[in-house]
Image (cartoon, rainbow, N blue to C red; front, side):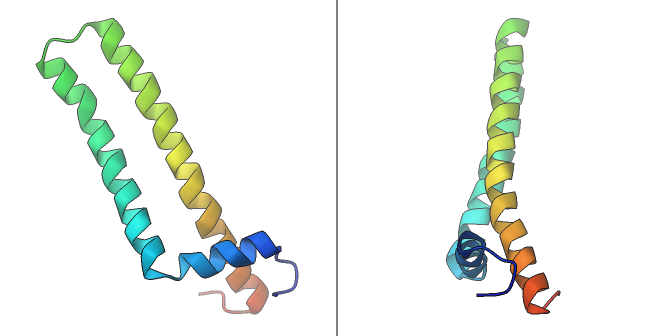
Length: 88
């Protein structure tokens, strides 16, 4: 284990170097783009301002959670690389 990096960070860093992580990250980005389109569709269908506001709140919160997940893994990878002297 790299000095100064927790076991959790090591595991997340290892995962971040896999094709599966790349696929998952791309999938999350696709979901976020699709969420951005939800309000456009709602406006086109004549949704009320209240409904559009509720949609915006839920979309923003959900995208924030997804971003935290991505950042958790990416930050662990960066910490692992820095601790290993690989800083790329």
